[in-house]
Length: 325
Image 1 (cartoon, rainbow, N blue to C red):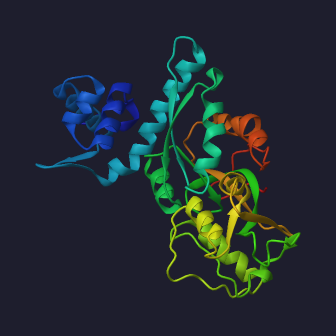
Image 2 (image 1 turned 90 degrees about the vertical axis):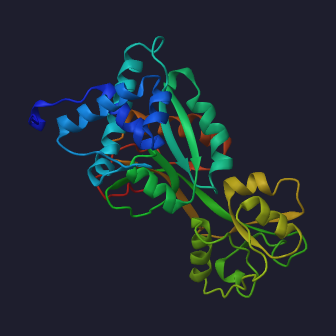
Image 3 (image 1 turned 180 degrees about the vertical axis):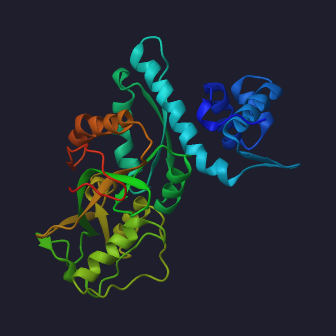
């Protein structure tokens, strides 16, 4: 007989069993990862389902799948476990282990942000151990929504219903051109100067591709996209620019790294300088301590290392609200 949900409180062991099975898709693998017998793990999950009065996992002959209720409740289980770990860490930092934060980052940010961000999060006082996944925006949004990731760092706004967006910093765009290109000697350029130029774009799915196209549309620039050259990262794009295959638009953090020691010229855009806002995407249930720690690390470690304009505000937005930068 099922007990009323209001009288049931899941145990950490039950929640960990649920999360392990969801992550690994197998009772055998989940039990091995948890360091317990398969029967004990299965019993913990069954007790959780009984207490909640829902089927969390569909047990098939060949594979394990989450039910609709399981997909809906998984983010809450992750957040509850994370909050418990954070509470233990706050009570006794010397005794507790570091709390794992599953963090996603878009490819046009990850190589440039992560060295200083991870150094800051490795500081003993942070209390967190980041696990990093590099994916494009659409995949990160889905991973945050499903609970596979706690937070994602990407260009905002993304307008993902039910998720919160926190601006972290602003960074300007610059143009990378071959040193002998007509635009290379300019002190500054404007979007309309890209008219009739071959502008190298990242492949579809990268938000920087869309941002570059928007920039060209602002100046009514009819760019000549290359039908042969296709690139998936900024390092390759800059090498193609150096070889004379076209020009490209780079975020300032990437330009400082990728164009160093190359035969490329970096040209600033005139006022109003085009820029993008990099922010944090999170579910409403993610502990405020996670958000605050990332903000602190950006202020103390990232901003001094990169050419960015950090956003100091940490106010939690309402659902669907984007904090003003």
